[in-house]
Length: 399
Ligand code: JHZ
Image 1 (cartoon, rainbow, N blue to C red):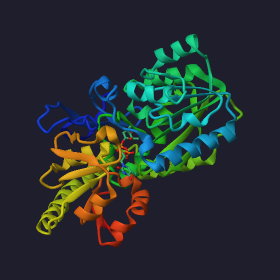
Image 2: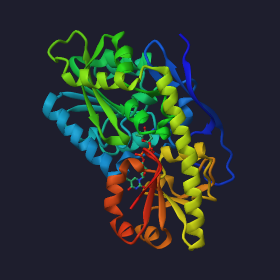
Image 3: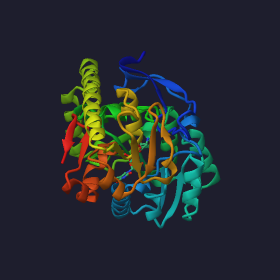
């Protein structure tokens, strides 16, 4: 069945492919969001090759945000206590912030060489490859054939071939094992106008409705679900073999399903309307930031960006905001420093608290999903009259 187009954002650069100089050439790719009537999955209609996005130059490092560091520690402890696994597999282990907490037999799968090296240096066995059924087969022949916990945070949504992905998970999940998957919630995206979750790294925008439909054919079943705060609202799915009866389906599953259906996540017209609202929000954002930028310049200050997230790259490109409006972006990740956000001419510079306090009256919050953490960190700036601007759920000022 053909996918229905929900929104066409035109051609945009790959969000995390930062440039070494303003003049460096870069490619743009169509960003078209579709809906699969068979499964109700919201997904990109076409994508850029995965090798261009997830490779040895990958810049996203989850260990650079305290919220994520705490998040991974807390879920690792919870899973250890609840399931007492003898073996753990992580799909997309990034900087190793989750898997490092386990003492049992463990392995990370990570396609980005720089991060695979990083976790190997922590003493964690890491295979440098993309997750698919072939990887699962190699794992079961060459290392260990089943895992009590398979965990994946914000990675399954990046995988283009979901069939092969879930076949692989089914293959290596212990008969009483649990696959724990975290992914931004489509319900939060729609409710909170989170337009900047739509970029090429993200192939799928899961809801419980679509996950249930997709995994059923592999003999897998969601038996519990949690609504969690990270990345602007995510879902944590607990998935088991369908035939394993010890884990009963919790009432959370029914509740989330009811909420999603009520919000119309399987209704094309409602979804199309949500995208229209997101696009209107972008126009307002550009107008507000342009005004604040002009005011800042008149007063010899600069309008800064705070957190060079992949989301920021997207929102700037979609709203056509460049270095004439936002002069520089501060970020804590060394791999991003002195690089430029493609399509914007905006430079990323090392985060320094004093810079923020001395040079700026207003900052656009690229890392809006860490608002709490950032407000706490920047108390002095806020107390001195500095403000943040956020576009989620609507354009507003944070004092
Ligand atoms: P953050 C990435 O998205 C990409 P991004 C990826 N596709 C995905 O799905 C999600 O992660 C999970 C900086 N920062 O987590 C650090 C500060 O500078 O929102 C990071 O560069 N100061 C895999 O990039 C960025 O912001 C701070 O105080 O949208 C945060 O990126 C804090 C808290 C963060 O993910």
